[in-house]
Image (cartoon, rainbow, N blue to C red; front, side, top):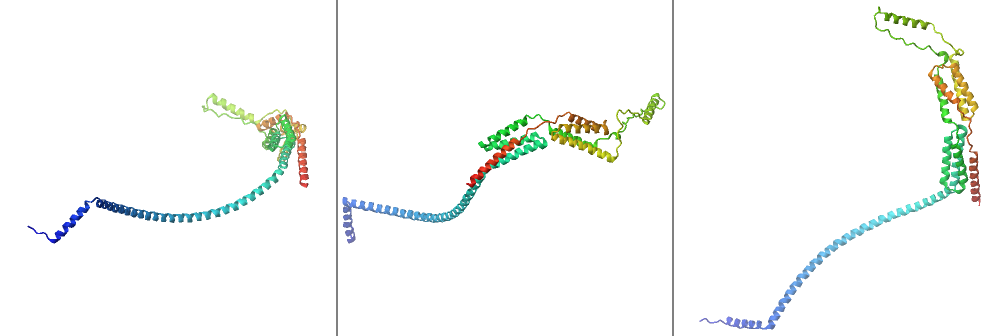
Length: 355
């Protein structure tokens, strides 16, 4: 039999005492509580460690955000400084613009005060031009254009004091439209065409016999009868050219030297120009007389068989049958009314400025 040593004897009672103690509920609850506390402490420690790591991460992120914020703040300050500089420039430009606006307003006030006078001056000039066109050129169309422009200028002004002047201008426009006068421009162009053709008109003593067209001989044999017949006809034509008889129903054409021919053409041109001047002056008697003498010079000194002379005679014949002694309406009353209105406004403006 084995003998127990003293150590085994001592451990056995201690183990048994622990076992007995563990069998007690209080100790078991205490052990469980200790385990739970240790587990909670471990869990809390792990949470605290996680919180520390999260806090460190958040702090690092906050540092980066603070750095970015500082950079943005610096950029904002720079942008603010640039904007302040631009605002300063804009304020200077605004002040300059305001000064210019004030100057423009003053100029506008000054111009608006004399606008009516300027309108009256323009209308007066247009009526004066229309009167000149009627008096010196007889150009009804140009006078109508000038009067219609003056009426449109007064209509844009919309001033009640201009109504009498507009009525006078409207009356003159209707009178010019109803004028049945001759076409002065067209008649002047016809006279000018004859004047331009005078230098090329052939004189009467320079005319030549008409050339006879000789038929070529047919290629017949010399011994045939047709050959001898054509030969005899050819000889007869040549013989007739030796002597030419003409019947002259009027006086012989005057023989003129080159100098006299030059002065003849210049004299004819002067008569035609006098006729055009009489046309512009609406002097029917002088116009008809100059046309008549021009036609007589063409009949006496120029070749009436030439087509150019015939064309000039036809033009002069047409001009001779045209009545140019017509009267155009005057514009003196309208011009006087405009000048009186302008003078009255100038006098009232001068009186107001004197006060």
